Image 1: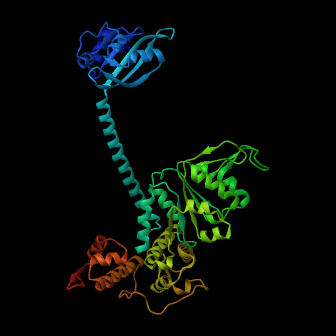
Image 2: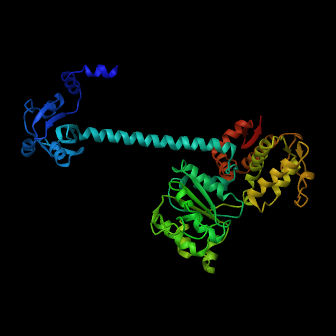
Image 3: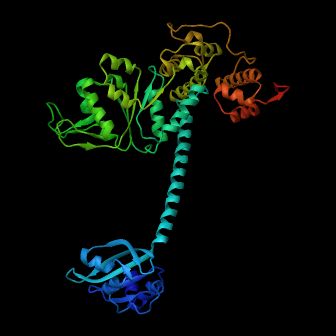
Length: 472
């Protein structure tokens, strides 16, 4: 139906359609003679006698330069380039040809637009793209925050946790290498993934390689891949390595201190120029991968021992972040306990609660295994406890119990862990404010914002009178 209607459009109607366009349109012969121009072309060049003129001649006269028709004829392809008119105006001109039945040039159609308009549109587009990128970052941050409500490494309110959050936000969109240090179980993997999620690579792969968990004989093929038949036992199809799998994304090299010495030079080469060779292949491969490394070892000592390359250490150590052990950020312990208790209650369809005695014991515990040890213990307690309340008797037999009086007094003897944590937080805020006499100083000491303290005042119905807190 539509095709039949289109056939009814005669040439005159098509020319009228072209006349409605605001940009100059030219139709010329291969010889350069102008067959037709629209009204915009006549208005722009302020000439009514363009039809019948030769564009080659007009080019020699300086009416415009270069001639798009000439370039199309010479190149026999679509052309788009800047063109200068005799009035010293810049155009973005494009041209293409209509072929005859033999494929040779029959007519050339040229379109032009003032370059100032193109630049303006381009600038507007850049602004739009900039705004869209900002929105993308904000949306990405909102999604991350939503995700963190269900699974979050940064649950605590300690000053160390707040500083780690700040560091993650600062370095997320900087593609330089990051080295994370800290004891086993402090959350280096979670922190690396958090950096990835905040970055512009968040929709690309996050690949995790534990250098200590793979035999030395296999780690090279895992990391760099191999061509088919590269060695005895190799797959006949070959194998892509983790670097190729992480292209455009992030490769997290955990326990980098355990990487075999003979592979460290190959990793250094990749860090320096993003190139590598698969095993059994002479062809150089490229990959756009951000490297985040982590270790619980002292790499400086490894360098002195000769088991870790000095140049690789300095290449990795561009941005070094130490994640403190859990025992040095005590304010994070209770939120983590609450988080993992809820997590495993949901996972195993339980409704377990912790007695206040157990909470106090867990708070005092040194957590040599850090967050990983805490997570494993809470999971074990949720699974093995028969009643709905986890008591001291439910703790493992070898778990050290240090219990005298509760750390935080509480008038309510039976309450949920969230309610108990609210009481704990309120007590800490009251005690700290009475010491500092300032919401700003209270916030600084507790590692939170001043607005956070003000919101908690409202939540717990606290007010200040004579520099002391009063509960309404």
